[in-house]
Amino acid sequence: MTTAPPRTAAALDAADPLAHFRERFAGAESELVYFDGNSLGRPVAATADRLAAFVRDEWGGRLIRGWDERWMDLPTTLGDDLARICLGAAPGQTAVGDSTTVWLYKLVRAAVDHVARTEPGRTEIVIDTDNFPTDRYVAEGIAAERGLSLRWIEVDTSTGVTADQLREAVGERTALVVLNHVAYRSAWLADAPELTRIAHDAGALVLWDLCHSAGAVPTALDAWDVDLAVGCTYKYLNGGPGSPAFGYVSARLQGELTQPIQGWMGHADPFRMGPGYTPAAGIRRFISGTPPILGMVAMQAMLELVEEAGLEAIRAKSVALTSYAVELADAMLPEVTLASPRDPAQRGGHVTLHHERMREVTARLWEQDVIPDYRDPGGLRIGLSPLSTSYDEVERGVAAVAEALR
Image 1 (cartoon, helix red, strand yellow):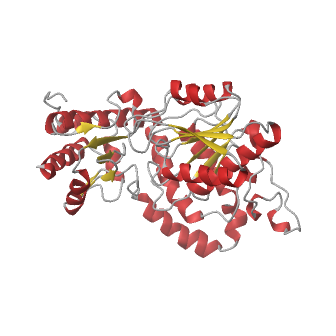
Image 2 (cartoon, one colour; image 1 turned 90 degrees about the horizontal axis):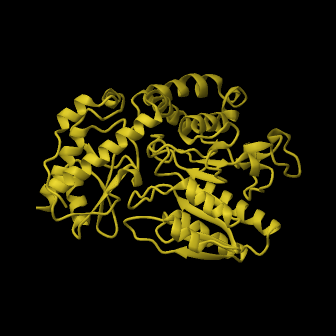
Image 3 (spheres, rainbow, N blue to C red; image 1 turned 120 degrees about the vertical axis):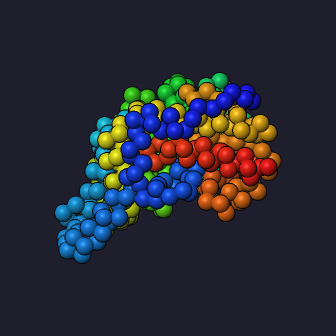
């Protein structure tokens, strides 16, 4: 690592065009250093009033009428807002509800079942060894259920899947490729359009996990010709603990896929209560049970901030914050190894620093109101949510890491 003197946090904060957004988050005024915005985002301050108004006026005032008046359509109307603001997707392809795990199960299972009907010789799911655990576990379970095999791409935990690796893994037996847009451990930013093209050239479908990019890294799902995508809303979309996930299904596939969890909310006429299941048209057929309205209400406040700031500006701030964290680590942590890409164009919204004592360091920091998180092997992860994080916070946090290591 180099030892060039870092720039000053005060100068960076003074020049930051998004600095004023920080005051719109609950708790941001405290001295606590929050380095875990890529696991759970701070609440938008306006969310408290929004939830109170919902309880008082909609839930308390309208009661069951709320379903007819707004709630029934909220999974798709909010999905369209999310698609427009963050995903680069046209309306009618995104729905909010369920957890990421449930969305993964529904879409992976729907994809491989569709391929089994149309091309029965395609019996492999391609996935990498450092994919997020839920993705791997769901893929393993579905492979066992459907008599499929998994083809594993071995990746370096400080990087991610490359075009050459994927090109070597896919072939005439590949049904589906499951990839993370931003690697949860290293923050490796995958070349989504190129990897999607490689999967399609091999005749396979591709599903992208956007959990560590939605709201922080721009995507262009339609332009990239993505088939399927899932993501959560409690990280950079600040929906709160357990807020509902989202699923994206390209319009060209919606009539071809049969979703495996047939619930009443995905029925063409939910209140008919008929004897058989008839799927709704479009993205609504991928909804299963009653949507979690309270979690959606909390998420709306952050989506409004993202739209106000602009996702490209948020990405620029994210790059600047992570680059500053790397710069400070170079200067203040000579004993630490960077376990994320040094090139910001290949890095998402967090930075991972490696040292064999980082598990103990993380525990010590939490006692001091400095909150990173830990990922094996020896990785202290610094997650920087652009609208709620200041450069001063980054400087104080990295200084605390240095002190804890000493």
